[in-house]
Amino acid sequence: MERELIYREVFHNNLIVVVNAIPEGQLQSAKRVAENIQDHLLAMRLPGSCHYEKISTANELRKIFSSLEYYCAEENAFPVLHIEAHGVKGVGLDICGEIVTWEELHDLSQRVNILAKNNFGLVLAGCYGNEITKSVGIDSPCAFRFVLGASSEVKAGVIEDQTTQFYKEVISTGDLNSAISHVEEQFIYFMCSRFFLTAMSRFFAKHAGGKYQRELREQILTRTLDGWPNTRFIRKQARSNIKELMKNPEKFIMDSMATFLHGETPVSYEELKLFYGQIRF
Image (cartoon, rainbow, N blue to C red):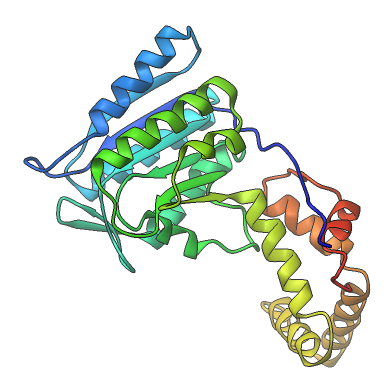
């Protein structure tokens, strides 16, 4: 029987920015979402603030990300960025006719999250927002602590109702596990720690032995030799290091976890091994 790995995911937040990039004349809910959040902050006498921005160009969105970088670095902000915009599957956000690709949005988010010490959340209140998570890889710092985005087309009224309840829970408790209970299945919830632990464990399960292990060794060798002279001595040393890694991957896993999660290690290596006891490392 597979063991269950349980931990509480806590998010520190003191700033929410709600961006409206829906063209005039179309159904919009961003301003009401911002007003609902601000009312909740005042009613509960909670710290933090909520700001509303109406934009009509891609550059205006990029400037908002630049501002978030400043506030994270200089004011110790831990922000959530809520973007209400049309999403295009396989392409990116449509900002009144201008495209910000999912890859660019990922890179903009990563710069903010590094400065926010992994306390940046992104809510993509439009169609296909979950597309951004396809740009995530475990070999670099994660671009966000969490992402909330739809996997398909979604109606504006549904976005308003569910995201408002989600924000109230995040603001009041910081408990992401509890907050996500307010969101229906059409929204995909990405949590950085869960993503890493699942991806890493599946990775080693797939490559545990045989041809998969040989393929893995060659992949790691290629990355290891990148930028180094391709000499016999260096190849020999690299292969020796990789062989040791495959025997005892603890350091590799924990170092990768700390890199991806910006220094955090939510579970120990022993807990990870117990959870995935069927995997032979």
